[in-house]
Image (cartoon, rainbow, N blue to C red; front, side, top):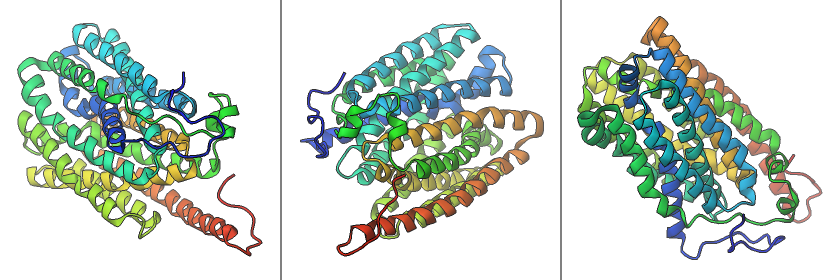
Length: 417
């Protein structure tokens, strides 16, 4: 199924929304729906363990299943989204997420809960991937990614406080699961303004399932995905336990929810900094700096036992994360203006998040939080090492490509593989 508003095949003109604000609304709604469940995982960890009498290792494996399916579906849909209707894909995904979310609140079977969480991951992946692809097809993807990072994060920031106050506190686990499904249902109508794919002769002739393999700059894109998989594995482990780390830091229930909400809002300063900086300093050092600060804050969080330290490091952790996202997705959008690599790298990020919770659960249950602190440190160092080499190469090849386009230059080539 394709959008009726799509340009004719072979038209290389970028798809432009007549009302860009509507694109921002739809992309924001897509990103919020995709992250609603993930954003609640730390607060659901204790209630799921209690309600189903399961250990840390067992419940974090459940998280791993949900996020692994999310990442896999997003990766598989990345190619087809170069030619399918993003609106149709998003609406189908939203419907799946709502149905599975409601069912997960109704069941007393842990097996059924696993199946429901896998379906929630499937639906969220379809919605999130459609939103990311639409943003990558816009005329100014870096700015669109920066803006929707802010807008979606503002909405997601209120979730921890509201979830504890209106759902988990008075109604327990079932209330929390219903609340997430209800929020998803309320946001679905806002998905109807996602941009259709840009059209190019190459993409039109490609099989939808092989389109991702035909996207340009494959070597660079794969290296980015490897680095981000490693990085997000460590970060996903810390995120899983961020609520329980708050308990270790002498906070309780509503105080933890309020702290996480406030930290997410204050952390948006990182996204505003990215907007202000733009590309005046390139991509290399902002990405390395953002990842480095994020890793340092994660290590400190794992060792935190003070409420002041906990809140301060959580704010810094969020700020560094929000700062680096626009640069990373902007680089991927430059590698392929159909948005295939932007969606694929986002999927790889989620795949790392899927691997993080089971590893973190095993570490905490067997060795405690001190060893958990070493987890993001190791993954962060490896990630930065890869990025230093990758972005140096990206910059050199980008300069070579620019030189090739200057009149009189005999250089042939670019960054495409």
